[in-house]
Amino acid sequence: MEKSLSRAFIFSFIAVIALNFLFYIIGYSILGTLDIHFTRASSHPTYIVLWFTYPYTYFPWELVIDAMTRDPSIHIGLIIMDIGLIASLAVGSIVAAIFGGDFSNSLGGWLLTSLACIIAILVIIFVDPFNISWTCHYSGCEIGYTVILVIIKGLVNLLIFGGITLLTVLVVGSYGK
Image 1 (tube, rainbow, N blue to C red):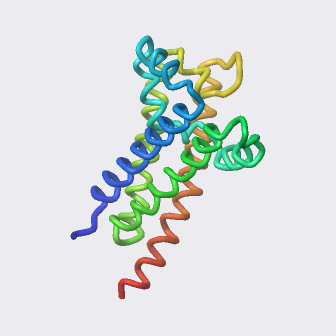
Image 2: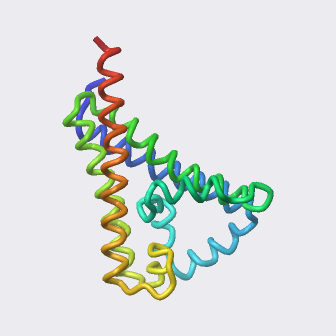
Image 3: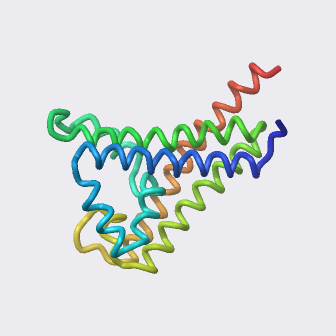
């Protein structure tokens, strides 16, 4: 199969959004709140877009700390979602590396995936202000603060998982020769 930027982008984007949605469904099902979230999504359809792009509203270390400090007997669904949010970005970056083939295509595919998710979050913030509280994670956030926070967190995720993409290209490329 031919390696290219478009393949790296398409497959990594699909991996990120599919895994996010899967881990959200599993986590909310375990918590028993899946019906609440679908009800919320019925009145605010843009909320579903957050399910696909949610890891870009966190710094990676926030998710790791959350997963490590939660009580497993009470919050197993949340722990699964925290791990899933990190795993979806890691898998998406590895997929970009595999389908990109070289450094520029792989990193470009991951860059496009990250930017598409960040832009999707920013669009839904402006379309439906209900999503501000879900993207900011603090009460009383204003739209300007939320936009800056999402951009910074998204770029941090882009850089950290972009490094994983480049390391994967290096490893896969050395075995491919």
